[in-house]
Length: 255
Ligand code: G3P
Ligand code: MG
Image (cartoon, rainbow, N blue to C red; front, top):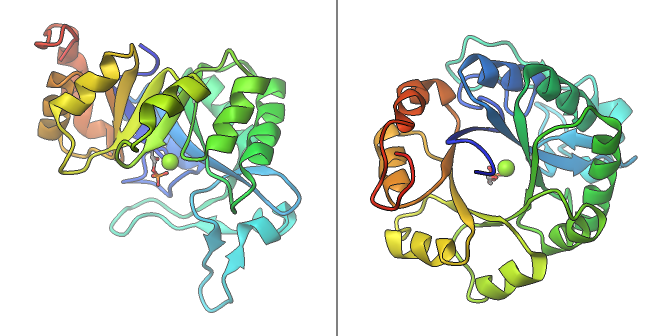
């Protein structure tokens, strides 16, 4: 198994400011063994953990991440989710996140999320440079961006790669072959069904699904052969994690 049954999406995004060190810490406290984070580059090519290419600051003109140097961003705060008791938290660099994930003994699914079109390869390269200097981690690199996956295949062939799709493309089998991925990460859309999961598994790949915040839905997906789910609320899945190893699905995997 490449990752774990439950992966904390952008950290424990449901209860903490997403993609921050606090979100990673809280994910660990909620029992997650793996965390998914998005990485993009600032104007001065610092890999930061951030989801949106645009920084919206209240009463200010929005800033584009790709045009903003790290020095300008490092004092900015990511807001906690509405209703959360958590405080806002600073934007984290990949270097800071990797160090914390190592201390917590977690795995990292790093999603390469270029801040603009054409930055996939550079984002991958700069991220690898940081990871090479960081303590060793269990890693999976995923992306919607094919240029990032191509660069990962060339520069870090031993780190497992994953294709990210909302739904499978017409040419997904060619893409699997081109980028030599080990898993496919799919959105939890209404059209997802056991046949789709089975067609991916036939190629020997694992399937992970985002974003699943219902335990019942997670159980259904796992019964279809999905290996794990990305969730904003790892704490909801404590019982599922505890009972998983004791049951086996019709597809021969733990449920
Ligand atoms: O990697 C799974 C998921 O994070 C992809 O969507 O928009 O949340 O980055 P998004
Ligand atoms: Mg993501």
